[in-house]
Image (cartoon, rainbow, N blue to C red; front, side, top):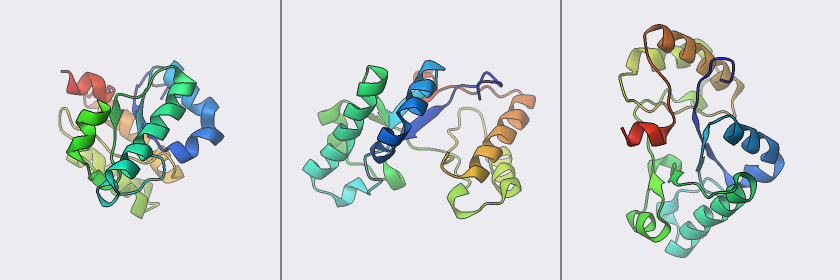
Length: 161
């Protein structure tokens, strides 16, 4: 992404932060937006309000300890959200409009094809950086969509537009 001068939004699992502090710091320093994806990737609508709050708060605290500020955006696992958390935590949930289901396949061509054929202006593409096939696909997607005139921005810029 740095070579392509592309900025992205990374929604981080708190359980992964300790082993990847340097990566989170680098993402932030390179201009990417860091968001919250809960601590353990649990469906928060199936948790008590206190448990859901703690999933988000503990991840916010970890991220803030690395980048100096708490995330303002979060991606709820499975797209399930408790609206009362929005007010209590002052955090904005971010879903997606294009989902290539990259976690179900290692077929890079399939992931790329689904994204480039479905993406329209102002779409939010969901990819998982924990799969090598998704990382390879993401770089190809960037090249193909930029060739079509698309620009990549972080979700804060997209949502504030």
